[in-house]
Image 1 (cartoon, rainbow, N blue to C red):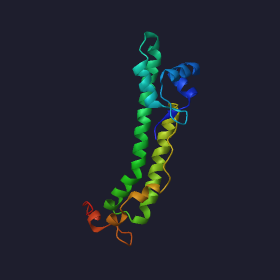
Image 2: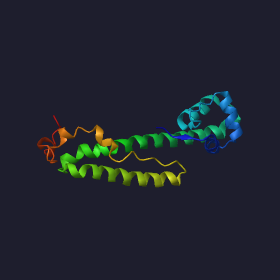
Image 3: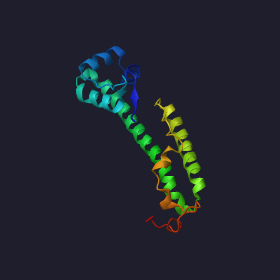
Image 4: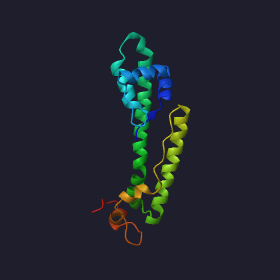
Amino acid sequence: MSLAFSRTDFAARLGVTKARISQLLGEGLPVRDDGRIDAMAGCGWVLENLTDRKAGPTRDNARVVMAQAYGWNVTVGVLARLPEAVALAAPSAGVHRDKVELLANFALLILATDINEDFAALDIPEVRLPQPGAWANGIAWDRLYEPDGAPCAAMALGLPPT
């Protein structure tokens, strides 16, 4: 998943008209199958292809949008890994299995809410949260916890799982 905008939103962020975006689409500005413009790909194209002096403000705006998109993409990646990191760290802290998913989902919700408030202040689209618990399918729970939900002895001692 990457940050993408409608043609109208992309035009506003670059400080050009929607007609100019249509013109650039005709010149090769990439557009996704859903009609939206991927922020990184679109801004990269603008920076590579608009080189005349009059394009300076558009290029400057493209750099800002690209930096925002990069931050957004990194944030999405971090949020996607957060519950897994909590799940892997929890046994070392002695957290019982029945509390881990709840703890990880709450951590995800709290962090994403804070991030989305900051993004809203910068007029950056909010990050959609992964489905609660969907991340849990990729965890090797049997390596971290005993059948009764207690952390494995090695994990309780801070040793890596075998």
